[in-house]
Image (cartoon, rainbow, N blue to C red; front, side, top):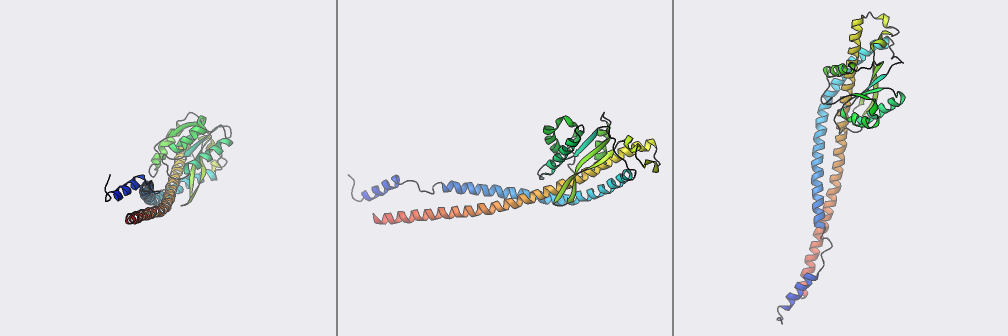
Length: 297
């Protein structure tokens, strides 16, 4: 038998052992989870903000290069517009999709793939050459039989005319004699929008058969060089404008991601504060209840 002085302590110890776990026992783990989630979202927000700043800086240079390429491209195509050059109807057409290798820029690449599929539906015998891995990944699943040529590691930085010339040389080595080369690219409308469009580079035979080509004094050797130059010029235009659209789309995507991350941080911060307040209130209630019970013994 225990003495009367020890019995109240035993009863209190037995009650503590038999007492069930408090209802908010799992709240401590939940608080840790919320705190970890908050930390990860804040880190993501820092990354997206940094990528937005980098894209904003690069966008100015990309727009400058785009404006310069437009001048050369439009001036070059004016010759064929005035000569009323048209593609030959009895030969195949080559579609060049001016995409890139990088993502995190919204639906800019999927838009090009959809535009290419619409053109392939209208001209099912056309061949496809792809610049960049993003459009290739989509078109390889949907229309692999049309792909005859592809390029990787393009448009990583601002395109140059030398890059376009190298691609044009590879296209010229294809065995098929195409009536024209239709380049599908994203046209820069403004900093918030863009749209897939096409520009055309004609074959030497199509240029020769132009209605008003006689108004230009063009030798055969010059005609061959003009055709190659026009193809490289249009490729340079498409690549430069597509690069500007990609940088702009990435900037908008990172801005939206940063905004969404900020909203999630606010929601989780409110949830964390409520859970923490509930936990502290529960602990205070337990302390007060325990103190009251001890006084009653």
